[in-house]
Image 1 (cartoon, one colour):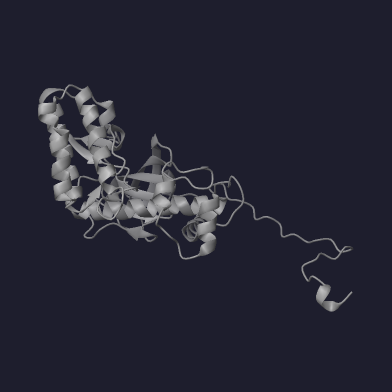
Image 2 (cartoon, rainbow, N blue to C red):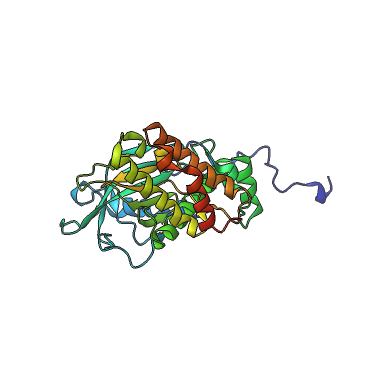
Length: 319
C-alpha cells in the first residue's frame, strides 16, 4: 500500500479504541436530552455551577445559588433602587409562575444572607435542547444572521446545538427589547439581567409573591374596562412613536397590576417601518386586543379600532 493511501484516522485492527470516561454529573446539573455542543453562554453557566459545587456544600438559608449579578448583561442604568446588586446576595427559587411554549417563568428571591435587603424577580428561562421547535422562530430568524456558517446550519437543521442557539437568541432579543422599551417609558417589567437563556425581570405582582393576573383572566366592566382600553392603546402609542409594535399582542401577554396594563412576552417586537410586514403586524395587534374588549361589552364608539390604528400608523410615520 502506498503511503498516501493510508488514512491516519483509521483505527488499528488489533488495538482497542480507548475512550475517555464520562465526567460524573453534579446533582444540580441538568441531564441533557441529547448530545451536542454548548453555546458559549451555557458553557460559562455550567462552569459557574461546577465552581459553586466544588466550593460550597450548603448555601446559607437553603438558597439555590449565589447571585449571578457578576455574569451576563445588566438592564438600563441607573438601576432601580429595589434591585439587589450585592455579589454576596443569594438566589432562592420560590416556585413556578407560569409555563409557555418557549419558556417557563419562575419566582426568585434575591437577598442578602442577613435579610437586610431582598427583592422578588421573575426568572424567565427559555428552553433549548429539549424543545423541538420554537413557536415563532421561522419569522424571527429571517434576516438575522450569526457570524459562523456552521451555527446557521445548526439553527436551520434544528440540531441540539442549533436549538440552544435559537433559545439564546430569543433571550437576547427579548432582553434588548425590554431594555429599549423601559428606557422610553413603556409599561414593561424592568429587565434586571440576562445570563445565557435566563432573563431576570422585575416581578409584577404583590410583595407576598402573588403574581399579577393576565388580562385574559379578568372580567372588567364599565369604567374599569374603558380605563384599561385607554391605558393599553396609550402604551401601544408609546411603542409606535419608536416605530415599533408588540407583534404578538393578546390578552394573554398583558398583565394588569394596580389597575394598569403591563406588556410582557416581547422577543418578537416588530420594526413597523423596516419590516415589510410591519403594518400588518400593527393592525393584527390592534384588532386582536379590540376583539377581546368588544366581547366584554365595550362599544365601537369607545373602541374605534379604525381610528386607533390610524393614530398608531401616524405615530409610527407609516404612509
